[in-house]
Image (cartoon, one colour):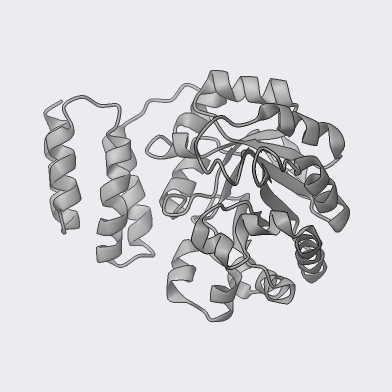
Length: 313
């Protein structure tokens, strides 16, 4: 059962989250192939777009057939954010998402991410300027509040809708919680009932049962899947109840090949060493393999190690 974000049709109610260091072109392409209704890039600085940062261009890589795709930007200067929305590098994306939920101290200290929860007037101005600057749907991702005593999700959601956002993603944790504790589904449910635009529920989706429960309990249009998709892009087939045959070696090699198209080999090695460990997490007798992979400086060596391991299984 799909839904629309603005004029963009989202075919599935399971969406890949934007995760720094993980939502690269490889994970996004694989997640899309397994049935993710929408994939979102790692968050990209609006300022870095202005300066044509080469690393930023790598974060914005897309594979054919990945549509619909969203790019997530962050910043706290309304005009800079609006200008980012018109950047040519973003025109290949269907949707532009604004991060107003990142709790990382470095981001918050600069007034970006979840710092904007404490400055609703500025947040509203950012959304309005972005909406004016592009015909693409603008969406916003935010947390339910600063801490347990400052839950502002409903008020913030209404502001986003009034400012022109076509959908919102609500992470059911406060800024103070970080990524610990449980996602507050009750607050997300209150947000769903308070606005008319689609609400995407984020937090604690790990399998089909949790996916179904979050959708049913909150009434959200979709569920965003983050950490559970790392090393397991087939989770999108699982929650959509599609039978798939999973070949972990093939998945890893596909992920590597997607990265090789846009990253230099050294960067592929550094990125994939940790990611491969996630692909191996539910397999037995992988401790020695993981140790060798995280110490390796060669892509060829890593592939040979993987071939040897899987050919013995």
